[in-house]
Amino acid sequence: MIAEAVTYVADHYRRQLYVGTSTVIAIQGNKFFPGLGDWYLGKTGYKSQQTDEPANPFARNNLWAPVDDERDYGAHGTFDDRASSKSFQVWADTHLSLVGLVLASLVSIITIGFIKKNNR
Image 1 (tube, helix red, strand yellow):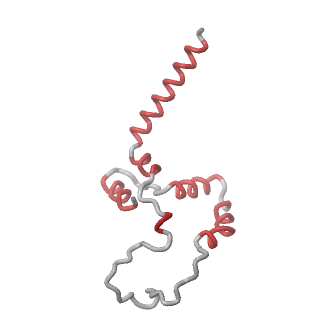
Image 2: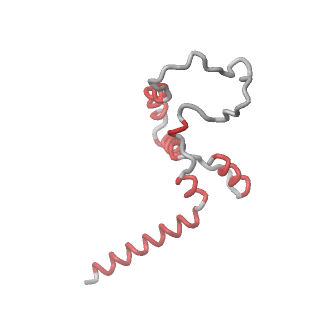
Image 3: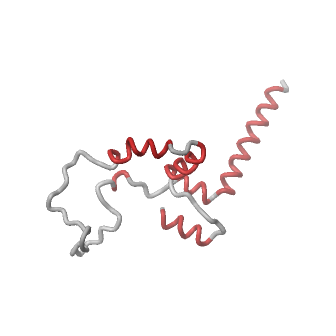
């Protein structure tokens, strides 16, 4: 999802593209209520990244040196089952013409229905 967003911005005349609904909420919300997101994350951010599962004491890590292992762990881990490979928000943001056409069509249909209902 992120790689697709990066290539989209590189191939189109866009200066920025927010990736993910939570990003849009955080950035836009900070414009109207600065500090609210910081307060909320201060209260919930650490706990929301933890699990009840105990840490594996034999788990290898790469804090001080690379893990000497053949497998490529990439960006995978405990929260893979919560991760999403698709984002409707990114799709909508990269297809603004189509979204605008659909919204204009819906407004037109609603307006026509409202006019017909009031002319009876």
